[in-house]
Length: 152
Image: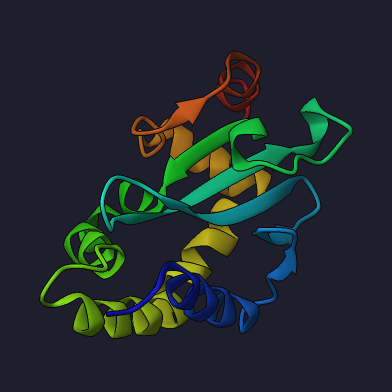
């Protein structure tokens, strides 16, 4: 059975291929207007979740050290619902198909999800996702909602 540390290490290595860098327990991808944060969190039992935060530079000075301090944050499977099943199975370290799902998530992370995160990690990408209704399954601060609502 894989450990939580092994789960995190593989995911972080895949993200580094797309320019993310590690600082503390998070992976970061700075952009002109948005800082994208990725972290791994233990849930109940042997379930681990991948969390994504977006910190809007226009709304704050001090970059956050926790995803929960971001202006928007989500679980990865809620941002990319088409991959929900195997993202969750990859994070369930006790699941029978966990290792297979984990290898699949690493491949899809490198090939597709990281690019999607790069696109979302821009002012335009977040505004487009907000107006398309893609950001309803997570936390969005009032200030971020107001900023994104007036951005076209």
